[in-house]
Length: 431
Image 1: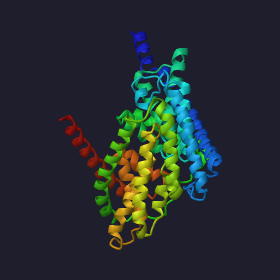
Image 2: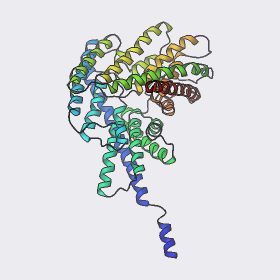
Image 3: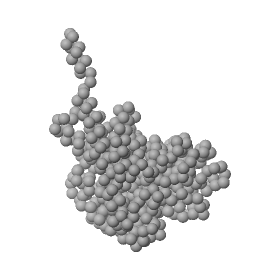
Image 4: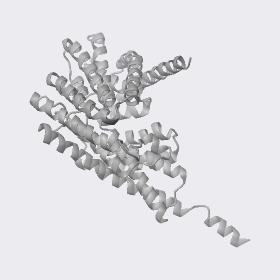
């Protein structure tokens, strides 16, 4: 009787399972952190080699690069990226995305690496698409590889739930390692991928994102990704949030639909050998006049965050539409990349436009406040991830804590508006 009780007591905790989960989490976080750091260096090398440009929060736009070099850089980038994407897509095994990996599909090792490098390469040459998808995909693929190796060798004991958590947390860690935003990385994992706010999910995801962030900061330090003026967010901005929220919700839903359509209908086969060079050429031609449209959208948002001249609003409207158009065409033309930072750029422009209405009405309010509210609201709507959007902009712009209550109102309204609009559209299509 006593022996059975002792045996039962010893079996209350499966220490092999606990050690397996803890070891795998830490190992992956370190591995992904160094991978994110290398991707950051790779981006810098490409941008410096092709345009003699080094992006930073002080200089986000290649405006000082000669126009002919900008045109040549992104055109060549389109040719090379198109060749790589054609080569890795033409034969089996097919490239598997994060959604597919979460459903149990295997991400091919070398094809995923080439796909990730092609994304970073194209953005480095000036291509108009987000670069945040690449480190997330790399993180998930590495997570699959480590889990499979450890399970086959017999030194890892992981449940199906553990495997899902480690895949999602790896995606968030990849993001955190590049953008130095651990809370955002955790929320991406929990809110968008796992869709379950359990203690276990949050703990594993946050630990991995934090470790990857610390290692990734070796490349970029802890400087803000977006450079904005310092200062508190006045409570008067709640009025602005009430206006910007619903507007950003509709705009974000349109952006989400547009990007999704472009990805669904994107060029394939040998056609990509023509479309990607053409998209690169067109990007370079637009960048001849507006260099801010190059890259992942950081330059457009950064310019909006520092704008105080109301007479340039028409310019910003055109710039925002051009940025959306070039990102849309990149995805439609066969390119792969993220839409988070392009969405931030579009939202910043929207907020800046709204600021004109409130100019001189709300005391102590600056246009950059509106641009930030628009950025976080449209991001939340386009991704349908309110918490991730709120903390992403808060973290990477190093904002004062007073921004959170303003962001919360804007994000709540934009997310709800976008969800309602998208549901209505789905019902109409179903009829």
